[in-house]
Image 1 (cartoon, each protein chain N blue to C red):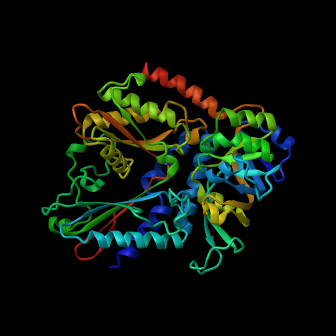
Image 2 (image 1 turned 90 degrees about the vertical axis):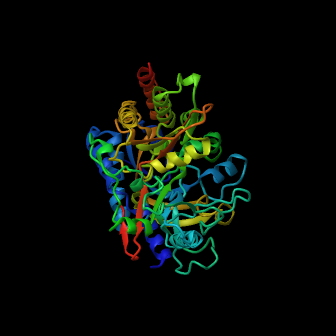
Image 3 (image 1 turned 135 degrees about the horizontal axis):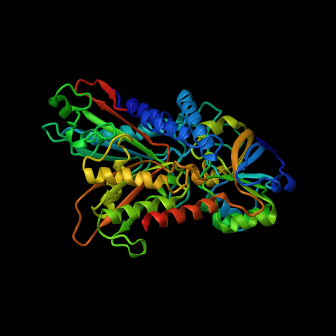
Amino acid sequence: MITLDHPFTETAVRVLRAGEAVRVSGRVCTGRDRLHKHLAEGGACPAELRDGALFHCGPVVVPLSPDPSQPSDERVGWRVVAAGPTTSIREEPYMARVIEQFGVRVVIGKGGMGEATRAACARFGCVYLQAVGGAAALIAQRIKRVAQVHFLEEFGATEALWELDVEGLEAVVGIDASGRSLYDEVRDASAVRLRRLLG
Amino acid sequence: MDWTDTLAELIRRTTSDLPADAEAALRRAADVESPDSQAALILHALAENIVLARQQSTPLCQDTGTLTFFWEVPPGTDTVALEQAARDAVARATRNGWLRRNTIDTLTGRSVDSNVAEGCPVCHFEQRAADGEGSCKTPRSMGVPPMKHGQDARATPVRKGFCKSPEDHAAGIEVWLLQKGGGSENMSRQFSLPDETLGAGRDLEGVRRCLLHAVWQTQGFGCAPGVLGVCIGADRAEGFLVAKRQLLRSLDDAAPEPELAALERRVLEEANALGIGPMGMGGTTTLLGVKIAARTRLPASYFVTVAYLCWACRRRGLRVSSDGSLHWLN
């Protein structure tokens, strides 16, 4: 199993090949639809994404403070109860620009992405990792700490940018920096089989 | 009996404890995929995740989904009180971390942190006829009890669940909860036949072409391996509801109509031959089940409606008998 530790260097990312299993450790930032739109439209990012990982994920979090009626506050502690990848293709309109402008090296999600992201991965030295979709209890175990949260009030808990410290998060390289996408290969091969079935 | 307590427990079980048929299907699939493949790796991780979520009472998947309650109640039931209990149970389950803050005000974009709003959670009420016969919606009253492959569905009598008598069946309340995530809901779709681009006419062959095309279009985006709930016929709105209801059926059952049961088996087999695999990374497990129901249609319309469910088949049911005793239905 290949280990990938934050900060992720271009060299470490460029040697990865589609289909390889990896374990990610260190800082990972979550971001979903709201964050991607914000960043792609020129918004500032309060977290450091350069040589970092962007995880398409909206976690289930509970405040460490036992009183749930207390107003939410970006400084109180949080615990992640469940966290798995969300469908990445929704971020396709924004992803390439975010990779280019913010220097993201690792994107973690599920289901794969499109042509623009594949091209951006090759051009700027980034990989797309497939986490296990829906394996939220398992992935939550790999999250050791919530370091910080941004946009909590504006975007809500699910869409917020959570800075998480992870240890040994399992994933498979879906799109590598040489321009290979497993998803494209599966889609094309399954299209041939579909045509054969439908005659 | 306190309905809010009971429904909160129903949510806890649904969100964290995958039904046995779905878990068994995933474990069988993990054994079929070649040992060092990505598909096997993913399926084994799912099996580990299922055990962990059950042990910890934490969500199986962080997208705790749209909560849809399907009620079957006797005449004279106070459905307003039951719906309020469902809303209170959802708010409590959210505070307990069993549900994600998963509700967005569409106009303001703000999170509705309680997960309770107008029409949220969704409640569908069906009144049972006084003779104890259900209105043919929930699995137990659809005449589709769990059965072994090859068994003739029509030869199997309709089960009355855990009821002691027809009178008890008539007086009891049954409720099923489905938690369906957004990633899979985004993959649900509706076809109107004939569809020239698919070469799909107004017959079961046309339906087959739609279903295989839907599986191909979905690839791994809906967290394959998934389940297809399908309605043939009806209008557009009813089609989606009937299709969604099919997702309450056991993976091990078959449609009572032989031609639909045959189509279910065929589409399952052919979809798994497409090679899409778990999460769309290749493999022989693309679907866990296909569940088809037919409804009448207008002469002018022929809809094929597909409700796509991810591997996390979060569905649980319970029944409260007339004497107040509670029975879990799966």
